[in-house]
Amino acid sequence: MTTTSMAEIVNTACKMTNKSEKIEWLKANNSKPLRNVLKIMYDDTLELNIPNTAPPYHPSESPDSHGMLYRETRKLQYFVKGYAGDGLTPLRRESVFIQMLESVDRDDAVLLIQMINQKPLPGLTAATINAAFGEIVPAKKYGKNAKKI
Image (tube, rainbow, N blue to C red; front, side, top):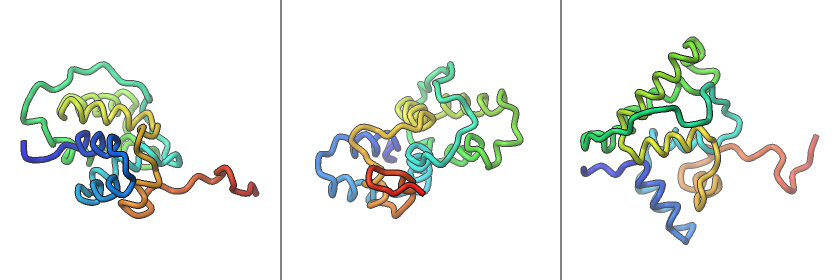
């Protein structure tokens, strides 16, 4: 288990108290799969085409599943509207998601369920993610001080 799982990376960042430490930690563990998971979780312009509740699944017991989410993130395109999953039936899309949950580490499965809720994690803001990875999460159209058109 030499690979740090995405859940470990995200949970460690959430627990850190200093924003600059969080940014450096995220930069040190930067990967396209991690950025994709965080983008889907934080980008409210992306619409998912699967329910935002946890489906029934059996968490993985295999020690070999640690770090598996890095490979499985290629399937994320099936769950975002406008991408490859639009041609799948809802039942097939949910089946793919359940298979994904069952193939990854238990903690990474929890992270995926948090991702489909599209709610920011406590202790990790979009601004911190953008500072670490560039502007991957668009700013909200109407923030507190934004002018409405």
